[in-house]
Length: 513
Image (spheres, helix red, strand yellow):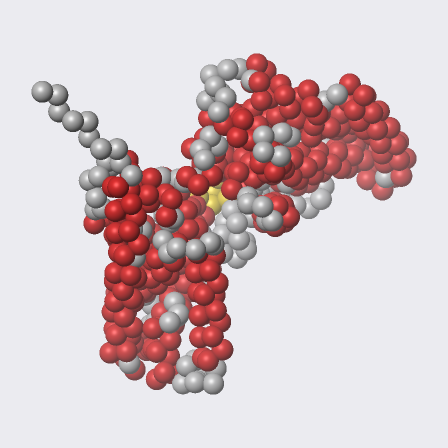
């Protein structure tokens, strides 16, 4: 692999973004702002925060500025990187270069946001000055920038992946999605009421400075938290652990998943993009479930509510996995051509039902086992109904994704988008009709909602079951009949693609006499 400083893509970005005049202007601007901010804080807040507090405040402000520039600014630069090259029709030239997918990815990962790295470097003097005047330890300084760098690289990898998959007309939406994800990571994966995991991502670096303040070295007392915020601790499978190593580990693992998707696809034709292989997509779903279960606060809710919450999170995960594994006509035609006329298999006809059944069933069992081991023993719990709710979850996910698979194989432009539109209209109409029909106000009618919605995940318990057991069972069986129906419908386009792939193969060479 080529070293980063010798990578042609990295060098190209450095030369384009760090021109001498631009570098000098930004360095002067950062120096002037830093001097003005430091002078103002040293005089304005000296009496309010003590002789050393203003230094810590200055250090925190500098880190906030660096996080905004590096995470948000660098992420937007990465989103613009591949998208603009596609718009200018120059990205195809990069795909055919001799650079390996990993080398091209690393060149863009560190080359696209190189200007934001330079701005952060220009802000380092004022940050170090604030840390020294605030009597911060060297270890604190190193941890702050470790969190900032690792979190920013993760965001940049995600932004590059979004840029690679962005189509014309969705650029603004991609930037908004990135900003929403940045905000979400700054507050954690969920409410502290449900998850015992602190915020992850680059914006935790300035938050870390809130409690990582130290009194002057002239006293040998333990750490004093001036802001009243205690050191954050996470709970991983019941064990209390420090948040910093957990944060760095999670960010690095997510960065690895994003880089895997980039390396797989960055030199492919856009028609053949495949974010993950089926096994990799299943592995990512299990990784997400491991995070959910490992940090979940089991005794915060009843077991039924805990299972409902975790299965709701899995709905998002497996819909994303399902969308990533859908096969359009071009992808299926390529798969069939690679087999050189061997025809379709049972897996092709039923795809992606087998993968989703295995993944959703495994995720449901992980949630049930987690509740079984982590719940309060005195709380009532019925494992059989928990398994039944998980099976309803499996059937509902597979039904909708199988429908989208059938739609994506149909002829016409934007067939998958059309399928998602029809699916949204279906759910909207069902929700509108639920109220006048009294589905949720009359207990004897609640079971009928299971034919259309994932309501068993939230409503199915012993009391609801005994009122209408036959309806609940019929709704469960009906889901699998619908799945079989969508599989039958997609056989026709699969047969057409199989015949066209066979006819496009070259004729075998005649035998020599």
